[in-house]
Length: 583
Image (cartoon, rainbow, N blue to C red):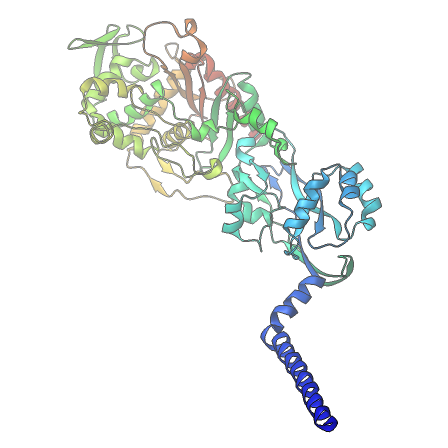
């Protein structure tokens, strides 16, 4: 009996041991074979961390080699996710932030062991010294550095240069975290954005081994970052500064182009902003102050605002009129202060008497251009306008994708847009740059450049060009037509009857055209209206007359008459440029 019991008991023990052994083998199989790769990955991730090393951004220079930006270190403190034994209360006191915030961040990212948690950014040197002195008390705590900017000339040229900012989620997804990280600063506007990939270079990386507490043991792999490429702009920063200062406290825009290659020599939009406000990450209060300002300092008026061109549009109508054989040496009209058509009266700013060309442009006679426009027809005006860059985007993306196209109306445009037919009276108004017509300041500069260089088209660029640049196209306009119009524009500035005499220079022969664009209809003097209802002041010009080296377009919002407000600004910029060439 005892023997049978002993055998039964021994058999039970054997089964139990066999069961345990089988369970052990199965578990070992699961750990080593089925789940082996997962556990190896987890093991490695528990002891390995990867950190991105920012690359120094390329420097942006003006056309004369003047540095417009400097690289500036941006310090922040982070902690490794999954770090053990962190005294969050003491750490919060050290960093002067909320302890609950640190605990919540650690809890949220405890399984994401590869991703460091940024606790505080924009550290001062005093904070750096204080944190570094106690860093060993907190396992996994690191001080890291990325690169931001110092903008040497503050707000001068800010709409061209742009600024840096932290990448958005969309940017991270589009570019990829192998090239940019959430802690990096990347271009968000202007040149910094247009050429961000060129400027930012290639990030490096460092893979380190850590212990169970997250303390640094050794560097397993290190890849050095590659500095971004430098960029040389076509802009002259001294000329840019003169352009912006010439507006004083007025709002508006100026674009200066090189007629020989399409380079932007200056592009001003005033008021502007200081990109240094963004280098440490702009706070919500300052952002609201800038973004909600009635002066709209972030608006690039040169590309993002479209205005009625007023009488500068007569330059374009002159070209079309001469080419179509309407304006010739025998063509003349009688201006008695206006034109009557049916029950409508279309006024002129003065009674000019007998007017022919070039007096029509020199004295800016509206009646002359009403009748030229009538003979041309609105569709012909539209065609020549587009040929000369009006109502056509330049494609220059320093303002992102927000460049305005403007409007050059036509029979089809009105039918499609408003569902109505076109009337002759609207052609009269369009012929003097009013009504539906609207253009941007950069388009006005392109038109002026094409007149100055006899129709040689160049892509507009913000980069300095090397050597001779060949035009991409030449307009099919006779050279004689350009000579007639250019000489008439010279008369606008230098003839006693001209409307732009305040742009007359003793050092260079300037040719130009004034424009006064109505904001509200009526015969009330602009100076007697409220500021926001006053006329816009335009002036376009080029110089020297016989071999143009600079073409300029200026608009002063609510500035009144172009001859008295916008022309002196253009003169300042042209003279400054010519003096710099001489020097």
